Length: 471
Image (tube, rainbow, N blue to C red; front, top):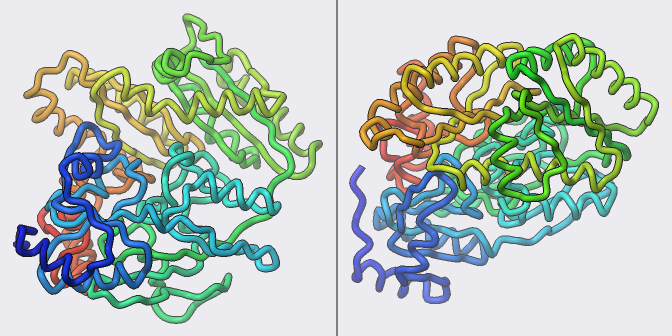
């Protein structure tokens, strides 16, 4: 797909067409909006636009569509797959001014929000009303709900409560041609036509720009219990996970962190509550929640019994909210800690939970053959293992060329085990060359046809998802 350059003539045309639109052309702003949390990538756009209304977005998309100018929606810039990077330059469409919680409807357990609201801000506003919005990615303190929608974000609570798409009822969306539509209805049941709402969730900003979302909510659980469990064997830690669910217990969170993940984060946050023993290989962070204390105690006792069968070492109970917050801080900062330690690539692998130990063992074996070290952690309860590959002493050639074959082997192993190449980070820019591992040519062509139906000129977030199609 060939796009027109956004040169001085086009910029003057944009200014004339949308005189009230806030736009930025200075080099520093373009650099600031040209990267996210994905490795060290940088793709500065030609222009950064900051609209304030759906109508402004509509007019901007109409102009870009008419002039064949690429436009890339962007949230908070916390993504890990390069999905919000302007790889074809053009316009970066920042959604930062769409930051209003429009309504929290207690009677119907629903909320209507704009996509620039920060996840944790929304969570806390719901909690103040006695309501619960469960999706909580590690970046929940900074990531926008729009980005969560675009990538179908998960987080620790997904194991019990599901990922973002489980809570989306309806979306207001601006299409690439500028039309504004609602995709569904504010109802819990809807079998009317194709489910455009769910099609939009996880589409990585390639089909439309979300300007409002209606979420369903839950009553907020009154009680939580949290335990940190150490293991001398990382594989045994992974093997124990499936047995907890087989015993009829569904934790609200079940996280895995191998030794280096904890060690790097302890150094990074400085105030760790964990005494890391020399023979500890991994930890599980397990939370149960609900409204009946006796049931939670019983669940914890059963979990302890199961963990002992798999060689659990020490079990630390976080008895106060402060202690719980300290442990969660450690888990949520792992990604930043690893990034501060080394240049790295993060692969967002996911398999059926009973295959988690096999995946971990395979990752280490592949790393041994290709000469890379990996730090693994993630959402063990739903089989989602984040594999952080460290550059370390690898040569530039090994890092940029041969490592790709090692990553391909990791993804092939995931698919062989019944999994896929991304659980919550998306395909974006960095994973698209591996899409053939997961989908047949026919399945990829169907997805391309969906993209073309929404965006025939390919202007919206081009260069993402598909390995040989820049739209």
